[in-house]
Length: 233
Image (cartoon, rainbow, N blue to C red):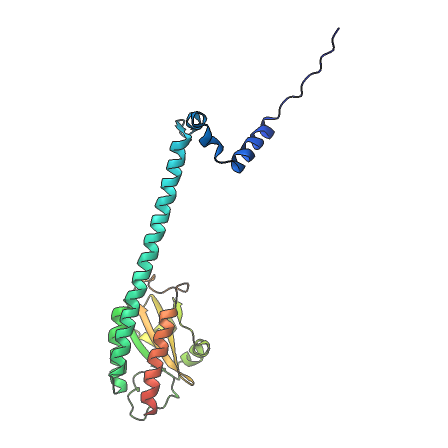
């Protein structure tokens, strides 16, 4: 009597892994056997069956849409930055034509309110900043309110800060009658701290702590340089 030996059962998972591994290493294989390639089908979540080619095309279309959306976003950002650069350039030219502190303050307020799309713009200077022509008298921070001690650490860092601030800070900067929901405080400095250029908005979302501040920083440096030049004159 002939003795037979039972064959070990195949491991489906192991076989699938081998097939997947082979196809990944030889992706052109299916192209050599188009009858196999076109016969493959993938069950859809909804129960429908689609061919592999259709499934791949759908995936590629979705990826293309994502890439197109990302490209549109990048183009829009580039356009916004170019627009800001143009407005920044115009402001610089306007400031070159100013001869007095009054002209500088009013030019900046008008231009910034427009090109930064903000509702309120004001200056607040440190009390120790000398102004022999008394042009800054309505723009000084109140020494009796404690606001100077609150703001000096921000001034020392020389970086714009954005977001929603305490009511006391907002009132000292913008006044009691103005409702400001978000703001940007831009340090003004030259060889030393001068004060702040303050932008305020009635919208909670206009200025937030996570927004980019490179243009705000450049704005502060430009305005600081022009003010200091007139203070020293």
